[in-house]
Length: 76
Image (cartoon, rainbow, N blue to C red; front, side):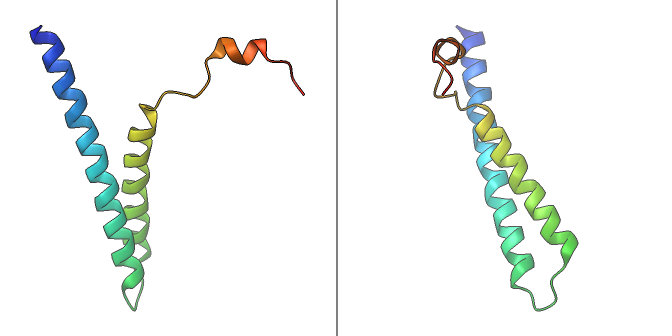
């Protein structure tokens, strides 16, 4: 029971961190674009943080189809 609670808490914390990375990366990327003199390094850093957050969120989303279903459907 205690191990399941720890696992669930860890999953919730990882999800919150992922969403926070997306938010911070987006804000940094917008900030870098809004300046008169664009700083390319800040923009790249913001995009990298944004993509890391998106990757961590999308990694936990299950696929729409199972592998067994893909094998049974004929190729068109």
